[in-house]
Image (tube, rainbow, N blue to C red):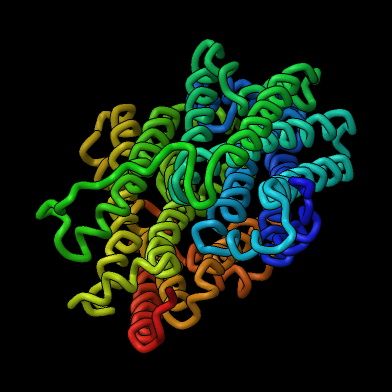
Length: 527
């Protein structure tokens, strides 16, 4: 029997299972460059405006670290620069897709069930890689077509899409290899996301400095393709070679390992547990502390980058009346303060993503049958759930405080009032919490009442982003925008302009979370 027998059937199965999630991330990510093009053309309608923005951006190394290198002042070059985060977001989606359909299915027992039929050894891995690779290609194609249709040069549009395809291919292979090395799906995601984080860090540090370290990163290779700015095609060869090496290593690993295990053996734990592991809260802390630590480091680095670049934002914006008017809607007595509020609003969505991830840890424990073991003791269902809710509820508080401290310290150093600025920025950051908690509460409701659809909370968060962030760009009516809780967060560092909205968001979060918890206590445990 061929090792690839059944690949087509499994690919159709994976497509059916991802019929909602895959089109969602393809469309949302693929449409981003077009939205940036519309936004930049409106904010900087003349070549002189764009040149001013370009000069101001080049003068702020932190901007290059955050988004990527900027290679010109043309509309296409600015759109390509502003879309630089796609070189990280698309690989992220590819990693999650591959791991879900490889080690995720193995951990849930589905791979063993399917493997009892006429299915080749490499069929599942190949189908997962084809699905993720196809999603990457579809995202890139949508971006290229939309940019070309907008009127940007065809060659630059093709180069932009090709840069996304090759970096996505690298991390499709990386995730496939991680799935063979790691002992379970959680570790596989950690390995692959660790490589992605390292690639982003190398690119960021390199672009903020001499640029040397950027050449050690697949993200940096795609950035060096330079769409709409004298395109260079040869850096993509580095990505293609790396992707091929990762994929080949993944197939070798799939041949050598046993089903349900990884090439790296799982470390045995201690015979007896330490006192610090007594109780469900301690167990939840042990399971969540690594993720929270990684998010803390990432948020702190982001805050330091933003704090160090705020002082130069006025020169970057230049004389763009449209941009200044847009920032004024966020409140603040200065352009710099308005920019900080805008950044906090965006990071609030990222922190909500952490909260969703932490919440779904409880769902994973239940799916793996581990919750049932804990609940067989004298631990009540409500006590177990509350222990796992501490991190999606309190984790965002910690992350937003870290964000406020790092941004406030950097901004305060430029104004000479570090203590005052830290206080106001931390307060503004914590103003994002009610919206984050609404998302968390909706996740609890899904987990409690419809555990099979708990992961749909990601679609809920994506819908809120589409309504509140993308909808504002394309001009959706205000009633549609109001459906997103992130529309109602404070638009100033003090937050006193949104006290009524904050109160309603907190009430909604409390009611929905209570209803979800009650549903969990009454329903059957999946295992």
